[in-house]
Length: 313
Image (cartoon, rainbow, N blue to C red; front, side, top):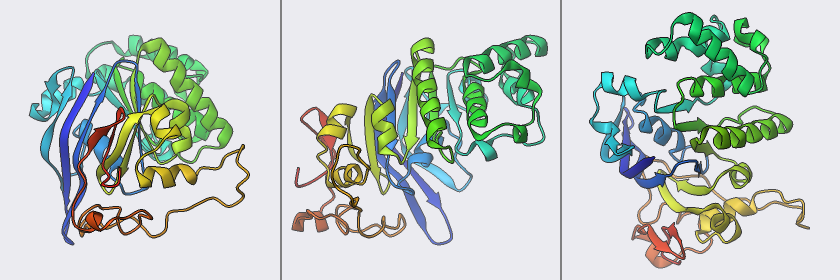
């Protein structure tokens, strides 16, 4: 469904060039859920926005390709992009509170993509919107409600319905669990699982929560400082992580079966994407650092069925 090759994105700021995404490659198959994980500021959201060419004005895609059903999105003009957004690939934006227009009814926001793509009349679009609200667990009567009258979980469900309104096959979910309580998170996880099965969706889940990724994803891609450090099947990543950064992330997850009372943490902070350290970007924080790590950047290579960028591995 989706093939990304050597994608690189830079932001141009007064302080300098922010290398937000560097040489990222991955594939997404039909009915697959790929979870992109990492700390805040590692380039996850920028990558998601780049896949739909929705980057801000000071951002530029420096190189690479994004093939959606064999068609390179980066070679399309704005009219061609408008035709595939929401109809072939859509996005659940981060923060349901801010993503919905507070002065428009839910129904009006839901049907807007259908009207723009010219698929339905307004009456037909409203009927489809009601069906979709019911599918995501919202009473269709709420179609005339304003966002502020909905709970956090209902807002998130409305955003999911909006992303599905034109029946796309690829959906990018950017932190869809932000600011939701644990019970609501569990409901949204089950909803995404059901939608994947019913609609044969391919989903890119952007999250910093590896526990959620391990519950929902089929593949996991770990990013650090704009680069992919480990990428493979969920079972391999969660049960036998090879990169030191992935290992530390997993050790920081609370476990009901573990006797450990104090969670491990990763010392230090992620590097500045303007002034990157020489060699491996994780070397200032890595407990297993080698001398080679301080001057030579590791290459992402296939090891035991997954891809890892680490000199020690």
